[in-house]
Image (cartoon, rainbow, N blue to C red):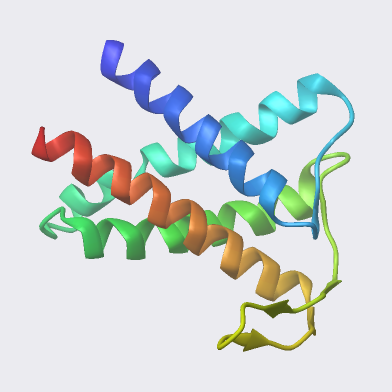
Length: 135
C-alpha cells in the first residue's frame, strides 16, 4: 500500500510537470477537476506493470516506456473528451536557436501535443521506475 501511494504521487507530479511544459494543454480551473485529471493519468500509469505482467512481457525500460506511452495517449484522448475544463489545443512552437542547432517554428496540432506529452511523461516515469528498480 505504501508503494501504491508513493507511485501515485510520483506519477501525479510527473503529469503536472508535463502539463506545465506543454502550452497546448489547458488545465481545469477548478482544483477538484485538476486533481481528478492528475489522478486519472496516474492510475493509467499505474496500470502499466500489471498489463505487462498479464501479457507476459518482461518489464524493462523500453517495454515500460512503450506501454505507458500507449496508455497515456488513450488517457489524454479520454480526458480531452470527457473532463470539464481540460482542453488540448493547437499552438505554434516559436522555434529554437542554439547556435549550431536551429529548430524553425511549426504548428503543434492537438494530436501531436498528446503524443509528445505522453512520450515525455512516459520517459520520465520509466526513468524513475528503472532508477528505483536498480537501487
